[in-house]
Image 1: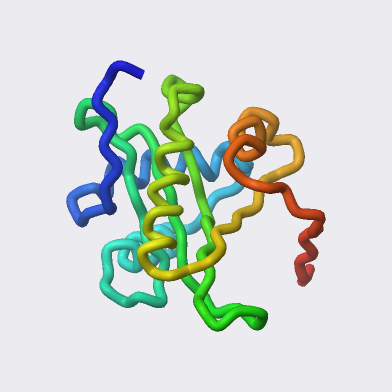
Image 2: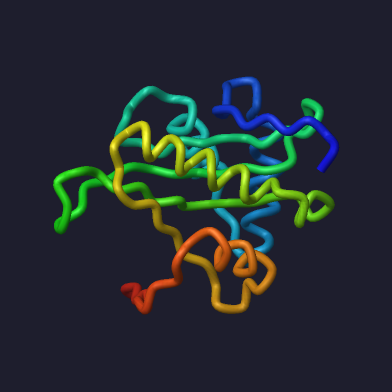
Length: 150
């Protein structure tokens, strides 16, 4: 990629672009959230509670083109907190240019700085494009996710 890529924390003035990117991420997974959830999520992203999740934007020449949300949490098998990468999205026109990798590596760097020995995430089995990247920069585990159904 020849354009200038910047990865930085989400800031209060980023609401409209963050929402555009997150809506597209949610559309990809064929889901949506209420306005109250969006408001709460954004407030948490820009807040200062270390237990809330954090967010980064990827900008190409100053234009937001990707996002990542992550959080640190305790783990029953470790003394240190671990890092869960919750959401990752890059606009379709920049996929394959290193944006996703740059966002993941930025989370890796923050996990390292926080002393978190592990960064993990989930994706759908059929998310073949993203899994090509994940297979290069992480190890696939044998775990299967189960979730309570109400």
